[in-house]
Image 1 (tube, rainbow, N blue to C red):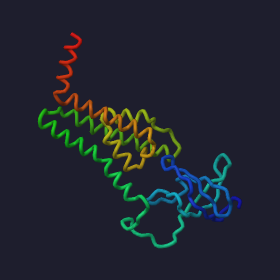
Image 2 (image 1 turned 45 degrees about the horizontal axis):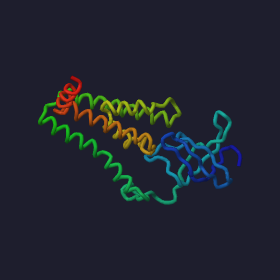
Image 3 (image 1 turned 180 degrees about the vertical axis):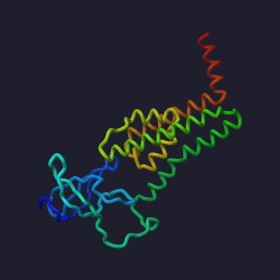
Image 4 (image 1 turned 90 degrees about the vertical axis):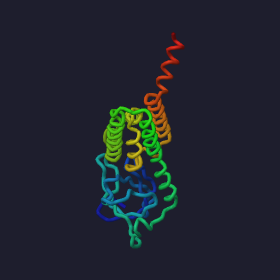
Length: 220
């Protein structure tokens, strides 16, 4: 089928949510058609693999075919989101909830340490500002991934988390659904969380004094 305004049906069989594009397997031919997130109508949920859709065929600036004016195929009235169940949805929700536990644990640890050894106010202020900055960096990278713009480097995201912005990074990952699947990045991210927590424990408790005395004794 050529290019025109006639609608074509197909199934979304490939989708990269971080970069905002994928491919549709057409029902009229064996070929696959490129589709960008901008071709979908505004809606509450992101495109899903296996979703039946209809679309028109247009041309990209480089002359290749791409899907335009994408519409989901509605087979029946949609159930409310609270009643809709998909395979693994419960596991994903539980996993997302558990991801916030380090933040809760850190807040509890901070309150306990502060009750025994008062912590200067600039420390929580640093964590708050770094978390806001980290969230904005994730949001900018997510927007660039969708639009094809200039990406924020993963080193910058990890560095922002290391200096205290990791709570904002966790929130951004879950809220924006960004950087949650790349194993190498997640390994580096959680390592940065551990490094930051060790630094927090070292500099806000008597451990720093003990370490300094030990160092002076060794190098005396």
